[in-house]
Length: 289
Image 1 (cartoon, helix red, strand yellow):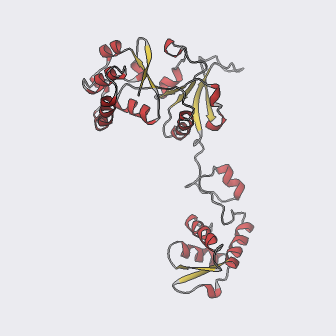
Image 2 (cartoon, rainbow, N blue to C red):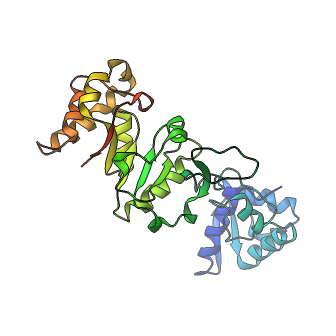
Image 3 (cartoon, rainbow, N blue to C red):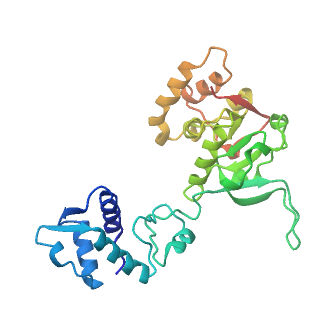
């Protein structure tokens, strides 16, 4: 029987209390009864420490518990498995806590790099890499390009006139249930650099809201004249209506000559949008704030 996680957490709290006093009494409920059952299973005699209502903890009892944990190759008290990857948990012992472990993709992002020929692999227009956010040297990139849709990400090329002013931009997939956490770490780190962050995604309420949430500085959109002719009510879904209020407040706060005003007016007043996959014509970088 592994030491239940709530029992371990309770014992860790007791260990901290014992730094200030010789003994700690806890009522017989929840995690304490888990400890009692675990101790009985591992032949730890609770003797006079236990009665029908409480269990008294002291340094000697915690030392016995730690001896059993060590002999079973389990992490000692005071060592939390929460938030650790499986490999990091393995270094603490043979116990695995899937419920609280760090996801294998927690720090991973999909990045598009220039073509990198590999023997035995047909040439492709770009090289898609699954990388650890902490392995990216952000100072090597002039701008972050956040691509909303996965199919658009695979086809995205930074070699367009709208991005000609940026040397070596970092093109990254926004993420989903698999990669969303990693991108959130990257966006936070990038925001601290105060460099350009361009959002390439759908021209709809959700897309622009996602751009605002990730602290993007610009949107990559078709010219307003082209978009006015090609945007359609079919790409403005009813599910997104409740989120329009935030964009209306953002529109009201923009200066009268701000280039984003015409885009938000088309989206919010005329209820016309366009998914990224349908973009055509020249695209441009439009400031958000």
